[in-house]
Length: 109
Image 1 (spheres, rainbow, N blue to C red):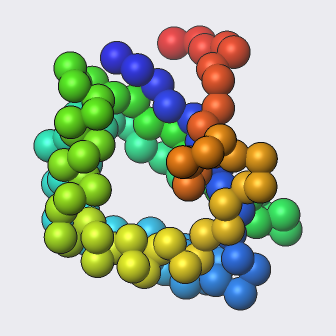
Image 2: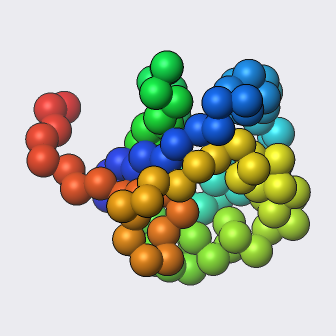
């Protein structure tokens, strides 16, 4: 199992839209994440800074292949057309990242 932590900004005028979208995530998007071995996925919002913190666990054997399946899924692509305009990537993110990944430094089960 691999735990992930990531951060991204949220456009101030899109906060309510983002909250509304995530209050009723499309069942097909949730099914694709589950089929791609994603578990315990949570997104937190820190206002007024409008920073999103996401955390999830990967329980599969081929992370790259599962992420590729998520990216290739037509319904997920439609979902991203709605959510990506809400997001503001951090300027310090690594090249090729949208959400800036984080290193785990502590965990308690």
